[in-house]
Length: 422
Image 1: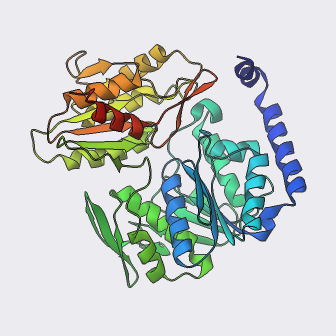
Image 2: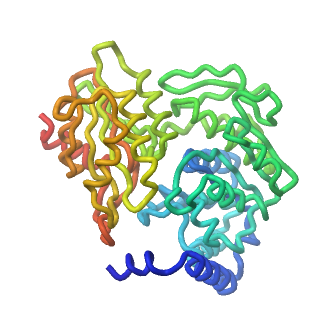
Image 3: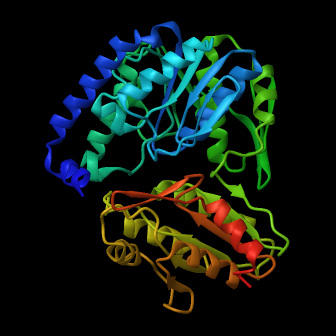
């Protein structure tokens, strides 16, 4: 429990000073390797990971040697490994170490997914971002930032030392980011015709979408209007690299899925099983808004398995409960990452927002996540949709200061293989 007590007792400004010191020391030790790379930073509440993967795909299609550091993976050229740390952005030491390795292996570009915590704590201090991308800013991490104003301010820090800022005109109050340095901005949008990168002729289906930017047509296998925004963010981010939209179109068409993001699990039971990382009210609304359109017929049911992270923003929990209950037929509440918080309290707070659901009829609480998933699969009939959200492609579950091995997809496949659900 010492690490937990340390986190709780040491004032944040002292911890921030420590992180900044480590970042400066790491920069000196590793020779500030970022100065030898063109670095793209992507921040935002939702869509960061998919945007990073789209940018990387475009750069690789254009023949660029690229390094990627995201919530789900790390990649240096063709070598790839899973991010099992549960952190979007690693410590300042590990960030500089990663960049040095990228330089040693001949990379030209690095794409970093950057969290608001990392920006506030100075974990990317000394990283010379050429391009800063903002996807959106909706409610999240208010346990840490306290107010949306402070949360947005943390996100703006990515822009302050970048040379080019990429801004989503469809996000909440984009003007705040447009006024933040750097002076050069590239904007993107589905709706605002003043955008530099504008999606027109949008045709969205449950299997993906088509749209065009200028004279170039794009086919995107990733479903949902939000994924069009992620693709547009990627297109805007590579503008300084002089990559043609034709090359970008080929790259984006090749992306069939992103691990843990609307990821399907194939099965022979005639049900649709989806895994998604959605952990914010906005992400859940977009996820279930899309899933509700996927019902093959009026008799099909949507069964949701989800929870909320412990030791985090408690105020969003009833909002999440209300959103999910408004879209689905059956809810199964379960453990996600309780950390040091009482899991029962987390579930009780989600329940406060749930509407039109009756306990033990279409609302169940099963704290064992494996048993909760098995229950959902047992309830599902052909044509139904089971959505397991909150962990995506994560490889561990945080219980206290312990990290236990966990992966939703593998658990689902194991349950189906063993027949636990029938």
